[in-house]
Length: 62
Image 1: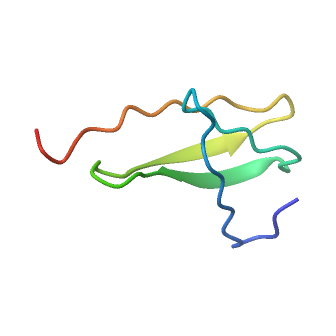
Image 2: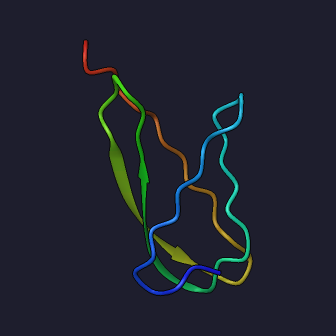
């Protein structure tokens, strides 16, 4: 379980999905980024049953 203020990095699978397990309830800032695309940040309130957060990154070349 991450400690307060800790940064956790995860790589997406072949379908672009990331799973982070054992997260405590609370407030998190999630950032999705990949080279060539504009990064996105979202604020998430983690509840008892977990959360699903979706991103749609835009190419910087558009």
